[in-house]
Length: 111
Image (cartoon, rainbow, N blue to C red):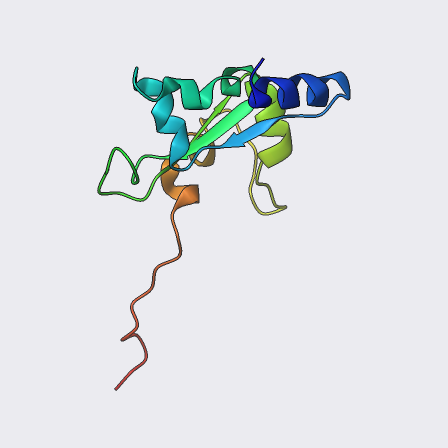
C-alpha cells in the first residue's frame, strides 16, 4: 500500500473528506513514466489542478474534479439575498471565471 493510499484509507475510516491539491503534480498521473508518483490519489474524494501550469494553457484556470457533485455544490455554492435563484443555468457553477486571480487596470484614476 502506498503512503497516499494509507492516508486516504485512514481518513475515510474517520469520515473525513480527502482532497488532493495537485496544482502541478496531479498531471503526473497521465504519464506512464510518472504515474507511480500519484498512486493512491485516485481514492480521494476530490482533486484540484491548474491547466495553466503543466498543460501551459494561456488562461488562468483552476480545475476541480469530485466524486459527488452535490457535495461540492453544497459546500461551495455562492449565494446572496440579491442573487435570485431561478430555473436557468447558474453560470458560476459552469465557468472557470471564479478561479481567476483579481486583475485591474493600475492606470484607473490616474491623471
